[in-house]
Amino acid sequence: MSKFYTEDHEYAFIDGDIATIGVSHHAQDQLGDVVFVELPEKGTTFEKGDEIAVVESVKAASEVYTAVAGEVIEVNSLLEDAPETVNAGAETVGWFIKIKMSNTADTEGLLDETAYQTHIAD
Picture 1: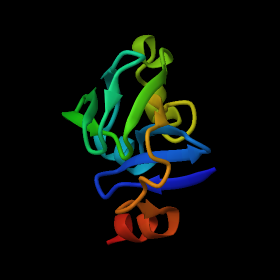
Picture 2 (picture 1 turned 30 degrees about the horizontal axis):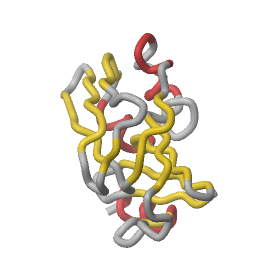
Picture 3 (picture 1 turned 180 degrees about the vertical axis):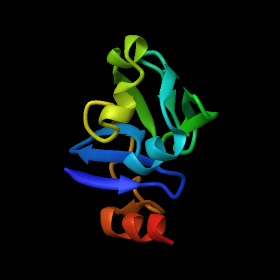
Picture 4 (picture 1 turned 135 degrees about the horizontal axis):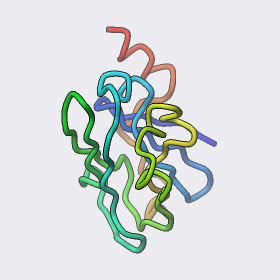
């Protein structure tokens, strides 16, 4: 699995042509306690950079954008009843959607794990 991040703290963990999309641990930490997550429906297609979700926390509401293009093949339904799962494991159990990528080379402009850690340290 390859891990990529955006400068806006979304991630795309890519395994073959499937990308798991969510917000980074750093993002959930900045948001505070997540109280609601609005996710797209399975079958929806997105272009890279499209808004895929809205996250509401005790501090703010934030849009979440996809780091890759493709079709939603799975939605993390756990987040509907337990949005706090994002806080418990943003980069594990708190993922948002899985996308079948329309272009597996669509990682240009994304940060690898080392570059992302440098980015959030600044």
